[in-house]
Length: 129
Length: 506
Image (cartoon, rainbow over all chains, first blue to last red; front, side, top):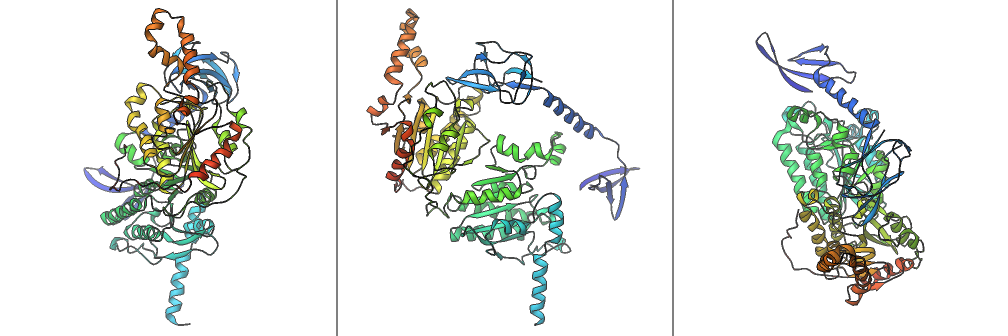
């Protein structure tokens, strides 16, 4: 329950707003309870925007360099279909050939690095769609 | 039957009445406090204490209930004694009032006095607001006792609902935190408060869900798919822990110590640039199916967990070449240090499987304090007096060598495979520094110089000649050799000077 102070005709009232499990909004004022209708407020639409953004992220994933290093080998072609766990790059870092794999199935939309490129941690190596 | 006995029976019936709680909890796919206790403890072993404690708050007179929203007591798990408390979310959201907190404090104190593990099954939104400072202060008593008991008895917390405030800080002071996917949440301030204070909109799951705390924050140690799984995992964990710091962990003979580890040669590529999965190596070396990983999803470049070797419980710390080249970084350093200290508290010998080129270089790590966090590993190992064995599989360079292998820093037995490279640094880097002038004059000399350096230094023999490696063994002899080493030093006693406590880098 959320406590709010509302001003009606210049007078302040302390009310408690409750959202029931069925999604009804009840306003408790003193011993009275009112059911109210709400418009979709800014916050709700912000949540929706955020959810839409998440969906977009799910559709398109940037594959990032987990370590600073050198691109030693590019193992997949731009535009190709890749399977989850398929090896895409070999990143030479910490004196080792680190496998960079596809986090899920998809089309390798874009490869952003070339062989022997130096990359930093967090650099985008490829975009998966 | 006398009226007084009748009245008592009525009261007791009311106390054990779980119907309302069941209705509320089952809807959310959760068990009630009493159902959880029944599932976790041996049949009929539970003895409840303080069951009639209730809130003294006048304001809550109309709502008060015997027990005050938490069931506390004693029971056994696989015939070993434990003290336990389980919060009842159906009573005022499991909120922690004064009486509630006093009950929890009582049970921790009893566990401490009797040298038994203490288990908390948490399902609480935090301090009971209506009881004000009285509730907060009794929360302070819980923290004080958690801290006093730390290192004396194992303390285990299972987060079984949305927990905030006191209900997350107490678990944070204990040894292990379990969470259940999609039902448990932990945060200091919830989504509503965050929204009003900073305007950030975030949901429970992404703020403090089981995945966040098991993968990102490292707050939790284990994630279960559902509540029963979670309680089953607690039983498994207890099988690796002693009752208290004066005992050794339980021994179960389970696998032959003379079994050859023939697969290891195939698992670990000789070429030090190639990666592999260290967990296959662990599974092959230790008693079959005995490895129980701790914090498996967090800082996966280091693998830590319990296993058995010839029946003895050991703490395994290993580099994972498959993830981030197995490097030591801030997160993996903290993870290793915490695990090493836990093993040291509870007399669990440590076995390191080392294959690492070193600490991760870069400004991100340096500016976030890798010196401070990396030092925790040095501190934890130096301080630990349990038997410590280190096996170098392939690479052990520089600072990482000192941290995970160095005999002079306190490792009791150091073993190495013939393909081990124990040196200050790799060949390329070394010759660039040592032979700088020569290479500047004649760049073609680099390859030959690097080859010479490799031959001379990148092997286990240079260290063995100095007595820094005790045994060089074939991969297939690994299990046999480790079992012998462990037997050799399992009764080790080491005394450090008495002091109030050390000042560990944090």
